[in-house]
Length: 144
Image (cartoon, rainbow, N blue to C red; front, side, top):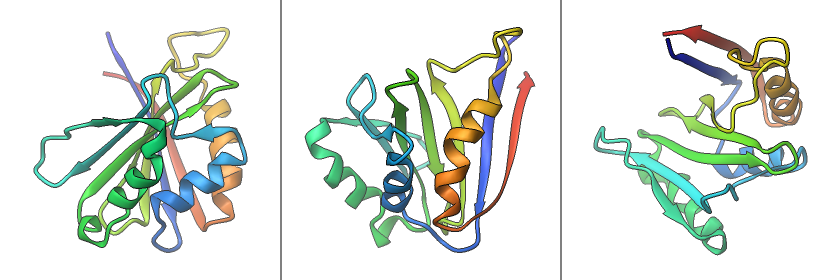
């Protein structure tokens, strides 16, 4: 049996990937993950993730935040190096809804490692995002 975990975030107004990354940087999050920088613009329903070097992070943010992509799902991987975990940050068309999926060395609960430590992710993500208009969230960890 496999599991899926995600946190859906709702903002009071549209946000940019750049604003989210800057807000999360204060809590130790970064675009730099073990494979470099990963991003995606889903303009063809293929979810084709791309890789870039850390030196290209500003260019990646320009691409995902381009007005040409406002009607497409875009994503970046974010990573918390001190905690050794991260995942995909997916911004939906219109940019007022976002999903975080813990896909990089997902943290499990100490007493039940198969389950995701959602409290840790919520504590690391929610407070900095409040400053840019986070209005609410829904967290799930489900058996598939």
